[in-house]
Image 1: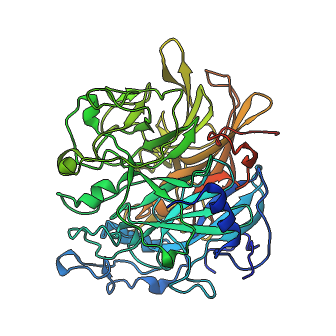
Image 2: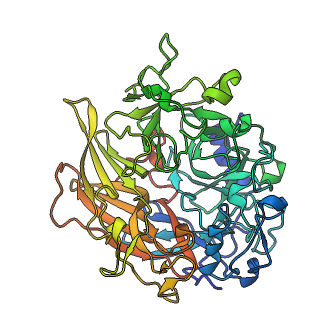
Image 3: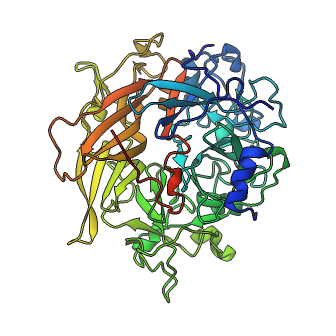
Length: 573
């Protein structure tokens, strides 16, 4: 089969037991999924951005006819209010809280300056010869928390998550997974969640999982150093009533699984395997809904530690977490944080096995024992109205950048022409945290916002102007904060960070807004905001597009294969 790297550019939207070495060998020579067209490689040190393209087919949904969710029980059914045309199709989210449509994924290779090199389409059902039994993957177009990109610990692969489903399937992001069925879920379908790994030659491998039933997998990292072939993933689970099935509880949050080498059709995954667990009871707080304290979105590794962020949902604490692999004290509490807040053990190792949880207390306490900690100095408030962390990047052992998505409030002030709540935010954007040796904790140095134009609407070619009649708020989006990020340390003592923006708008689903890729360079040693530092926009999603994840290209830093700290890379400017 001819493998390829498609030069499709930026088309308008209308139109277990393997060793790491064996896994790499099979990825290069085994039955692998490819894109169509020319044979072109990723170049080390470039950027990779995940872009989602909706096909704008008006027949995807028929207003007043299509029942939502698909195959719904009569008592749960509603009729679609809008047809399949973009962007009004997303007004259906106002009547169907699970509404979404799957779409194809494009990986854009960009130079660090933002210029497009080429693009690779992830195999999907709209492509020639990709039938239902072929390797393929899609994402839910409007699901804003999906499709983060992460380099593997060796730097040889980039991984991300999606669904084993065809293009234009409805409400897939809230379906059950085949082995974890919640009868109270109003979306009755079943679809595997899938992790994709792509190498520097554009070869794909896929691993399917029963985790995240009723919700979505959001990020994945392949641990492929020192003989490992493990995937760490972040996401959420559950779309039904209490009590939740045990598979939903164990399938939420932080998961671990073997990276597969077989085609998807030959894989038969079992129940999910949690690798991390946290409960707000670790801080002496009253328990909330089981399984929702680990509604994770951001994911990274640094110095042999796996970190997660939580920034959404009505339960838990929006903050930065890490998995403690150093063991438990005599009371069964994590050694790094017996009271729920702490710092990683300097001798920590990456996790290699799931939690051996106590099934007898799943329904009341969740996955026990708890082996996760809040990073000391980061927020600890429950149900925060000001903390919405998403992507995270460690520039070094004492400098952490945290993307804050913003509060999502789309209050619009017609007099100023701004989304007023978004414009007034002081914590949204890129937060810089530094480690204070005296305090023995992290503290926030400042927040980078200049150039983001928070709350100021921008226009997209062919995108509607004026108000969305279904919401009474302008269609035009405005930046609300940042989601996924990646960075590099430069030789002049600065750090350059690339980020994907979040938005507010009058769209029926703000996750469907065309958003941006932005960049900023910060003085790494600074602890107060330097004058003149400002974000610049490198790319804006076009009509029918959204941007989701950003990383370096696979192969970047691959010569650092003996360390697990693949995010902290140095480059020439």
